[in-house]
Image 1 (cartoon, rainbow, N blue to C red):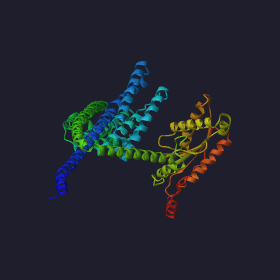
Image 2: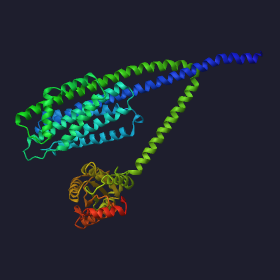
Image 3: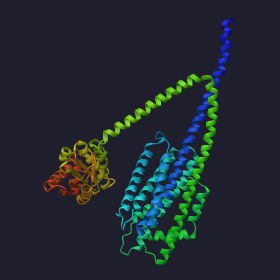
Image 4: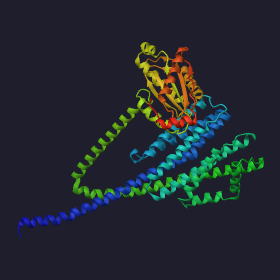
Length: 539
C-alpha cells in the first residue's frame, strides 16, 4: 500500500469519527436549544399570565373601588387611597408589558388583543382625568374599568394557543375559567342588584344577565373540561353548597321576571358577595400558582442552558472560526430582517395614516369605513357623517406661520379623538377639514356629538411653537341615513354633510347644522334595488 494511500486511510479514520461526533453534537444542541426556547417562552408566558390575572383580579377592582369611594365621599383620605390604587395599577401594567415576550412570538390575534387592551387602558386614563375634574359627579366610570378587565381576560385567553407546556396550558385554562366565572358573577350581581333596587316598573336588562350566565358557563367549561386540579374541585364544591344552589335558584327566578321579597334579596346578595370574594381569592391563588410554575420553568431552562453551554464549549474547540463567522452572518441576516420588517411596517402605517394628525388618511379610512358599512346587512341600523373644518384657518397660517397651523391641526385632532365616541372613525379629509363616520347614530345623535366636539375646540387653548396660546373655532355639518343594504352610497352622504357644513359657515361659523334625514326605502323597493346592483362604499 502506498504511503499516500495509508495517509488518507489514517486521516479518514481520524476524521470520520469526528464528523459523526460533530453531527451528533449538533443534533443534541439543536434539541436542547428547542427545549430551552420552549421553556423560556413558556416561562415568559407564565409571567404574563400571572401578572395579567393579578391585574384583572386585584388592581383594576381595587382602583374602581377606591374611585367609587372617592366619588361618594370626596375626602382627602379617599383621594389618597384612589391615587395609591392608580399608582399600583400603573406599576403592574408596566410590569405586565415588560414581561411580554418578543413580538415575533405573537400571532395576529394576540397582537389585536394587546392593541385593544392598550386602548382600554387609555380610556381608564381619560376617566381618571374626568374624575379629577369633577365630571363624574353622580356618575360611575365602572363600565370603563369593566371593559379593561374584559380586555385583560381576552389577552390571557389569546396566550393559551402559544403555550407548549401542558401543565402551564392546564393552569392557564384554570385561571381563565375562574376569571370568566368571577366576572360573570360580578355582572349578574351588579345588574340584579340595580334592578331589584328600582321600582316594579323598571325594565329588566335580560340581555346583560344572560351575558353574565354565558360567561359563567364558559368559565366552568374552561375549568371542568380542561382540569381536575384541587383548586377546581374547591370551586365546584363551593358552588355546590346549599346556600349557593339557593342563590342560583333566586337568580333564575329574577331572570324569569320574579321580584323576590326583601328577605330573599338579602339572602341572594349575601350569597353572591361571598361567592365573588371566594372566586377572587381563587383567582389570586391561580395567578400565584402560575407564577410559581414560571419559576420552575426558569430553573429548568437554566439547567438546559448549562447543558447547551457545555456542549458548545466542546464544539467551539473544534470549530471556533466557523461558529464566529456563522454567528456574524446570522446577526447580519437578523438585523437586515428586522430593518426590513420595521420599514415595511412603517410604510404600511404611513399608507393608511395621516402623518401630521395620526388620524386615518383617505385610503385607510376607505378600508375601515367599507368594513364598517358591510357589517349591517339589513336596514335596521343608522349611519351618520359629521364633516367639520376650522374657521379662518388660512388666517392662522398667514399670521402665525405654517408651524403654528400644524400645531393647531394636531391639537384639534387630539380633541376630536377624545370627544368622539371610541368606535367612531375619524379621517383628515383634507387641509383643515375633518370627517367622522358615526355608526348606529341618527342625525340628531350625531349633532349632539358634534356639538360636544365644537365646544371642546372652542374652549381649548392651543400652545403654539412660539409659546403663545391660540383659541380657534370650527363649523360642523351633519347628515345621516338608514344603513340599508340596497342604499349604501357613502358619497351622497358626504355631499349632504358638506352642504350642511356650508350652511353652518353661512350661519356665522362656529355652529352645528344637520342636513335633512333620508329614511330607509320601503321593503319592496329595497328588494328591487338590492336585486339591481351592488353597494358603493366610495369616499
